[in-house]
Image 1 (tube, rainbow, N blue to C red):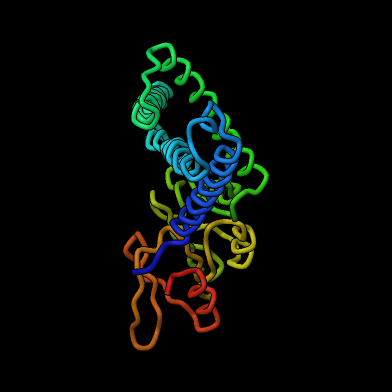
Image 2: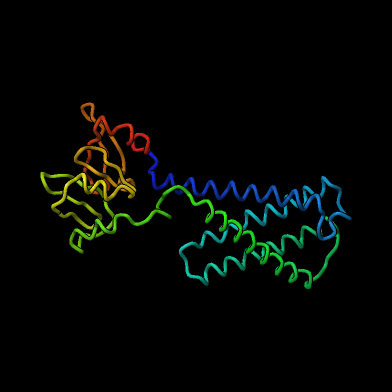
Length: 250
Protein backbone atom coordinates (compact mmCIF):
# COMPACT_ATOMS: atom_id res chain seq x y z
CA UNK A 1 0.00 0.00 0.00
CA UNK A 2 1.41 3.40 -0.97
CA UNK A 3 0.98 6.66 0.92
CA UNK A 4 -0.45 9.46 -1.17
CA UNK A 5 1.76 12.58 -1.24
CA UNK A 6 -1.13 14.75 -0.12
CA UNK A 7 -1.50 12.55 2.93
CA UNK A 8 2.27 12.67 3.47
CA UNK A 9 2.27 16.50 3.54
CA UNK A 10 -0.55 16.44 6.08
CA UNK A 11 1.23 13.83 8.20
CA UNK A 12 4.42 15.91 8.23
CA UNK A 13 2.47 19.02 9.20
CA UNK A 14 0.74 17.17 12.05
CA UNK A 15 4.02 15.67 13.24
CA UNK A 16 5.59 19.13 13.37
CA UNK A 17 2.68 20.30 15.51
CA UNK A 18 3.21 17.39 17.90
CA UNK A 19 6.94 18.10 18.17
CA UNK A 20 6.21 21.76 18.90
CA UNK A 21 3.64 20.80 21.55
CA UNK A 22 6.14 18.44 23.19
CA UNK A 23 8.76 21.20 23.24
CA UNK A 24 6.30 23.60 24.90
CA UNK A 25 5.37 20.90 27.43
CA UNK A 26 8.99 20.31 28.42
CA UNK A 27 9.94 24.01 28.48
CA UNK A 28 6.96 25.18 30.56
CA UNK A 29 7.32 22.21 32.92
CA UNK A 30 10.98 23.02 33.58
CA UNK A 31 10.28 26.73 34.13
CA UNK A 32 7.37 26.07 36.49
CA UNK A 33 9.21 23.35 38.41
CA UNK A 34 12.21 25.60 38.99
CA UNK A 35 10.24 28.75 39.82
CA UNK A 36 7.43 27.04 41.79
CA UNK A 37 4.53 29.40 40.98
CA UNK A 38 1.19 29.47 42.85
CA UNK A 39 2.87 28.44 46.09
CA UNK A 40 4.09 25.07 44.85
CA UNK A 41 7.64 26.01 45.83
CA UNK A 42 6.50 26.09 49.50
CA UNK A 43 4.60 22.81 49.45
CA UNK A 44 6.55 20.52 47.10
CA UNK A 45 10.15 19.43 46.69
CA UNK A 46 11.87 19.93 43.34
CA UNK A 47 11.07 16.37 42.12
CA UNK A 48 7.51 16.83 43.34
CA UNK A 49 7.19 20.11 41.45
CA UNK A 50 8.50 18.45 38.29
CA UNK A 51 5.91 15.68 38.61
CA UNK A 52 3.09 18.10 39.47
CA UNK A 53 3.78 20.58 36.68
CA UNK A 54 4.53 17.87 34.12
CA UNK A 55 1.03 16.52 34.75
CA UNK A 56 -0.74 19.90 34.80
CA UNK A 57 1.09 21.33 31.78
CA UNK A 58 0.87 18.02 29.90
CA UNK A 59 -2.90 17.82 30.27
CA UNK A 60 -3.18 21.50 29.31
CA UNK A 61 -1.00 21.27 26.19
CA UNK A 62 -2.18 17.92 24.85
CA UNK A 63 -5.78 18.62 25.77
CA UNK A 64 -5.64 21.83 23.72
CA UNK A 65 -5.61 19.62 20.62
CA UNK A 66 -9.12 18.34 21.38
CA UNK A 67 -10.91 21.35 19.84
CA UNK A 68 -9.21 20.44 16.55
CA UNK A 69 -11.79 17.66 16.35
CA UNK A 70 -14.27 20.42 15.46
CA UNK A 71 -12.28 21.68 12.46
CA UNK A 72 -14.65 22.57 9.67
CA UNK A 73 -17.58 22.77 12.10
CA UNK A 74 -19.66 25.82 12.93
CA UNK A 75 -18.05 28.42 15.22
CA UNK A 76 -20.51 27.66 18.01
CA UNK A 77 -19.52 23.97 17.91
CA UNK A 78 -15.84 24.87 18.28
CA UNK A 79 -16.77 27.23 21.10
CA UNK A 80 -18.67 24.49 22.92
CA UNK A 81 -15.71 22.11 22.64
CA UNK A 82 -13.32 24.79 23.93
CA UNK A 83 -15.69 25.43 26.84
CA UNK A 84 -15.91 21.73 27.69
CA UNK A 85 -12.11 21.48 27.60
CA UNK A 86 -11.62 24.53 29.86
CA UNK A 87 -14.22 23.30 32.37
CA UNK A 88 -12.78 19.79 32.39
CA UNK A 89 -9.23 21.05 32.87
CA UNK A 90 -10.31 23.36 35.69
CA UNK A 91 -12.07 20.51 37.45
CA UNK A 92 -9.05 18.26 36.97
CA UNK A 93 -6.66 20.80 38.52
CA UNK A 94 -9.01 21.44 41.46
CA UNK A 95 -9.22 17.70 42.17
CA UNK A 96 -5.46 17.33 41.73
CA UNK A 97 -4.81 20.13 44.22
CA UNK A 98 -7.21 18.54 46.70
CA UNK A 99 -5.37 15.23 46.36
CA UNK A 100 -1.82 16.66 46.43
CA UNK A 101 -2.24 19.46 48.98
CA UNK A 102 -5.30 18.22 50.88
CA UNK A 103 -7.13 21.54 50.51
CA UNK A 104 -10.43 22.59 48.96
CA UNK A 105 -10.29 26.19 47.74
CA UNK A 106 -13.97 26.36 46.79
CA UNK A 107 -15.85 27.75 43.80
CA UNK A 108 -14.14 31.13 43.77
CA UNK A 109 -10.82 29.43 43.06
CA UNK A 110 -12.48 27.23 40.44
CA UNK A 111 -13.73 30.21 38.43
CA UNK A 112 -10.44 32.05 38.91
CA UNK A 113 -8.66 28.97 37.58
CA UNK A 114 -11.12 28.70 34.69
CA UNK A 115 -10.33 32.24 33.55
CA UNK A 116 -6.62 31.62 33.94
CA UNK A 117 -6.81 28.43 31.86
CA UNK A 118 -8.67 30.21 29.06
CA UNK A 119 -5.95 32.87 28.93
CA UNK A 120 -3.10 30.34 29.01
CA UNK A 121 -4.66 28.13 26.31
CA UNK A 122 -5.19 31.17 24.09
CA UNK A 123 -1.55 32.19 24.60
CA UNK A 124 -0.29 28.68 23.75
CA UNK A 125 -2.53 28.50 20.69
CA UNK A 126 -1.36 31.93 19.55
CA UNK A 127 2.28 30.96 20.05
CA UNK A 128 1.86 27.80 17.97
CA UNK A 129 0.06 29.82 15.27
CA UNK A 130 2.93 32.35 15.14
CA UNK A 131 5.48 29.53 14.80
CA UNK A 132 3.48 28.07 11.90
CA UNK A 133 3.38 31.49 10.24
CA UNK A 134 7.10 32.05 10.70
CA UNK A 135 8.06 28.57 9.50
CA UNK A 136 5.37 27.42 7.06
CA UNK A 137 5.19 23.74 6.20
CA UNK A 138 6.55 22.42 2.94
CA UNK A 139 4.21 22.91 0.02
CA UNK A 140 1.07 20.89 0.53
CA UNK A 141 -2.67 21.06 0.00
CA UNK A 142 -3.08 23.59 2.84
CA UNK A 143 -0.60 26.26 1.72
CA UNK A 144 0.00 25.65 -1.94
CA UNK A 145 -1.32 28.37 -4.29
CA UNK A 146 -4.09 27.15 -6.55
CA UNK A 147 -1.91 26.75 -9.62
CA UNK A 148 -4.58 24.69 -11.40
CA UNK A 149 -7.20 27.45 -11.46
CA UNK A 150 -5.88 29.19 -14.58
CA UNK A 151 -5.42 25.89 -16.38
CA UNK A 152 -8.98 24.78 -15.61
CA UNK A 153 -10.32 27.97 -17.20
CA UNK A 154 -9.40 26.39 -20.54
CA UNK A 155 -12.03 23.66 -20.26
CA UNK A 156 -15.85 23.96 -20.25
CA UNK A 157 -17.35 25.00 -16.94
CA UNK A 158 -19.31 21.75 -16.58
CA UNK A 159 -16.06 19.73 -16.56
CA UNK A 160 -14.17 21.97 -14.13
CA UNK A 161 -13.21 20.13 -10.98
CA UNK A 162 -10.17 18.61 -9.27
CA UNK A 163 -7.72 17.35 -11.88
CA UNK A 164 -7.23 13.61 -12.24
CA UNK A 165 -4.88 13.33 -15.21
CA UNK A 166 -3.88 14.87 -18.53
CA UNK A 167 -3.04 12.86 -21.63
CA UNK A 168 -1.45 14.16 -24.83
CA UNK A 169 -3.31 13.17 -28.00
CA UNK A 170 -1.55 14.55 -31.09
CA UNK A 171 -1.85 18.35 -30.80
CA UNK A 172 -4.60 18.11 -28.21
CA UNK A 173 -4.80 17.32 -24.52
CA UNK A 174 -7.44 15.11 -22.96
CA UNK A 175 -8.04 16.77 -19.60
CA UNK A 176 -9.74 14.48 -17.09
CA UNK A 177 -11.27 15.88 -13.91
CA UNK A 178 -13.59 14.43 -11.32
CA UNK A 179 -16.47 15.93 -13.33
CA UNK A 180 -15.60 14.50 -16.74
CA UNK A 181 -13.13 15.05 -19.54
CA UNK A 182 -12.53 17.56 -22.29
CA UNK A 183 -10.19 18.03 -25.28
CA UNK A 184 -8.25 21.28 -25.53
CA UNK A 185 -5.73 22.52 -28.09
CA UNK A 186 -2.48 22.90 -26.17
CA UNK A 187 1.02 21.46 -26.13
CA UNK A 188 1.72 18.96 -23.38
CA UNK A 189 4.97 20.70 -22.44
CA UNK A 190 3.12 24.02 -21.96
CA UNK A 191 0.53 22.35 -19.75
CA UNK A 192 3.23 20.68 -17.65
CA UNK A 193 5.01 24.01 -17.19
CA UNK A 194 1.77 25.74 -16.18
CA UNK A 195 1.06 23.01 -13.62
CA UNK A 196 4.61 22.92 -12.26
CA UNK A 197 3.52 24.06 -8.78
CA UNK A 198 0.44 21.86 -8.67
CA UNK A 199 0.26 18.62 -6.72
CA UNK A 200 1.05 16.46 -9.73
CA UNK A 201 3.78 14.81 -11.77
CA UNK A 202 4.73 14.14 -15.36
CA UNK A 203 5.14 10.35 -15.29
CA UNK A 204 5.41 9.82 -19.05
CA UNK A 205 6.11 11.99 -22.06
CA UNK A 206 2.36 12.01 -22.72
CA UNK A 207 0.90 11.79 -19.22
CA UNK A 208 0.51 14.12 -16.23
CA UNK A 209 -1.22 12.83 -13.10
CA UNK A 210 -2.63 14.47 -9.97
CA UNK A 211 -0.97 12.91 -6.94
CA UNK A 212 -4.12 12.65 -4.86
CA UNK A 213 -5.96 10.94 -7.74
CA UNK A 214 -3.65 7.90 -7.68
CA UNK A 215 -5.46 4.97 -6.05
CA UNK A 216 -2.88 2.23 -6.61
CA UNK A 217 -0.14 0.82 -8.81
CA UNK A 218 0.70 -2.45 -10.54
CA UNK A 219 3.20 -3.95 -12.95
CA UNK A 220 2.28 -5.51 -16.28
CA UNK A 221 4.74 -6.94 -18.81
CA UNK A 222 7.60 -5.19 -17.02
CA UNK A 223 5.84 -1.80 -17.05
CA UNK A 224 4.74 0.25 -14.06
CA UNK A 225 1.13 1.38 -14.22
CA UNK A 226 -0.63 3.86 -11.94
CA UNK A 227 -4.29 3.21 -11.25
CA UNK A 228 -6.23 6.47 -11.25
CA UNK A 229 -9.47 7.44 -9.53
CA UNK A 230 -11.31 7.47 -12.88
CA UNK A 231 -10.43 3.80 -13.39
CA UNK A 232 -7.75 4.40 -16.01
CA UNK A 233 -4.19 3.11 -15.87
CA UNK A 234 -1.35 5.49 -16.67
CA UNK A 235 2.09 4.17 -17.68
CA UNK A 236 5.24 5.34 -15.92
CA UNK A 237 8.24 5.67 -18.23
CA UNK A 238 11.67 4.43 -17.15
CA UNK A 239 13.06 7.97 -17.19
CA UNK A 240 10.31 9.20 -14.86
CA UNK A 241 10.32 6.18 -12.57
CA UNK A 242 12.75 7.69 -10.01
CA UNK A 243 10.53 10.77 -9.62
CA UNK A 244 7.40 8.65 -9.22
CA UNK A 245 9.16 6.42 -6.71
CA UNK A 246 10.39 9.41 -4.71
CA UNK A 247 6.80 10.66 -4.54
CA UNK A 248 5.74 7.35 -2.99
CA UNK A 249 3.74 6.20 -6.00
CA UNK A 250 5.75 3.01 -6.62
